[in-house]
Length: 349
Image (cartoon, rainbow, N blue to C red; front, side):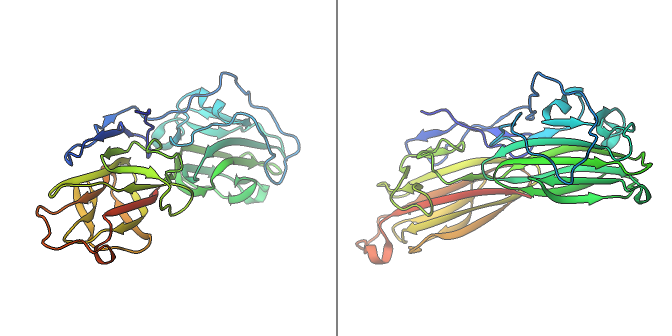
């Protein structure tokens, strides 16, 4: 058995080992609660420095990449070492008691000269992209040309030059692959304003296209008859495939767990080549059927499930009725008793 990986959505993930059973439809993965994921900062410290000639957009860099391809990233600035997670830290510091709910936050320096700037740059690498949020508060004046900006891969996504009395939540998607996120405060003439940021949460989109050639990417629970092969992929080279002889009243389930604080949508593509009274396919959420297929689809069809916050299990169950059909199977009408599944996606809300 290959080692399993973890699917984690936000802070309190569950881990479920991959199982292969002999067909007992009541067997499900064991869920174990683990501590919230916290990125480990590099051992070196970047002391805040001044930047004499601010640029219109962030500069490129290649160092200190945080490779967090599946796990989310949470930065709450409750420790001074949190600033070491950033590739570039110029003119920012931890400020105790000024964050959301009176906790700590990252704050721009009040010692910047006219025309100088303070920048934080963070580089993450998510295979399928995702979205992130953070809390922002600003004390700026338009008269002094102060400006706070957020860039993603050198593209301006947000800017403000006003004062906000409280923190507000800002959300943005980010693309797949290496992504450079920059928070930049530019001081104007006579400006002495500040910007505070807190609770940076980066959530990856979770996608399994079975391109590993097996069930190792997500913590799948696999019962006999479900395999990954190249017989009929929706995209790429592989898909999940059910093709086995099943006795009457027997069922075979393929499932995976999701633990999410925000909820979201789980979508997938499915091709059924089945037909009642011989067999059917059930889509399960927490063990309850929410959709059934009783005839061949003839092609891949999309399906989506709304997922509420909490711990859940999404399953795909091939099932035979509890009797032997009194007719012979016409494969044109009733299919061959196979199912293909591809392009599993979970997009957090």
